Amino acid sequence: MLTVKSRHVFSSLLFILLMVCLSTTSWAQEPCERWAGKIVSVQGIVEAQRVGQTHWDPARLNDTYCIGDMIRVHKNSRAALVLANGATLRLDQESAITFSRLEEKKTLFLKLLEGAAHFFSRIPHTLKLATPFVNGAVEGTEFFVRVDENKTFISVFEGKVLASNSAGSLSLTDGQSAVADAGKAPVARVVARPRDAVHWALYYPPVIYGKAPAEEDTNDPRFLVYQASMLLSGFATGV
Image (tube, rainbow, N blue to C red; front, top):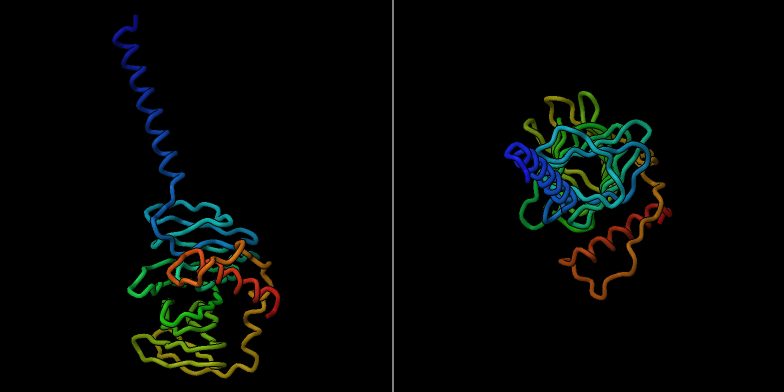
């Protein structure tokens, strides 16, 4: 027959085991009901920090991330993501980005903290970008952003981006570029071969998510993921 002390020890061990099981179950569940971005390519060392946590975990293929999560890419590494609104995002080495918030009409707000990113979105008004020196309101476009120590560079390949900060704003369209220095309004910058800045982003392996859904429903996440995967495949093959 168990003594009082033995029952106490047994109860303590049972409580600890229950906590471990609950923790494991919670960790295995989806981090949020509606993810903001999904990893579709990882090359090198890519890490993620979940909202409310202080440690970094390896980012793996098909991992999904929520509002408030941060992703960072180490040196000699790259990452590609499909965003919940159908846009695609490629991060260059030594880059870090945060999924800031999801606004009305499926507009996703991102913060590029450092490094460089290549964006592609055909759906108007679904993406807003913040950097330390300038923000960008996107209207269905393909563009490149690089954050340096004291400035942000934006180059628009197709579509339109409104670059703005507290000092002023500048509307950019096809083939136009701009630089925003710390504390200054964005100014136009002539770049002879702007796409040279994204050579690193043009050679991702194709990513195909099976067959297309029966209907082209932009409210169906399966259709958006398939559409994004086809876009990624097109870029990878030079289409």
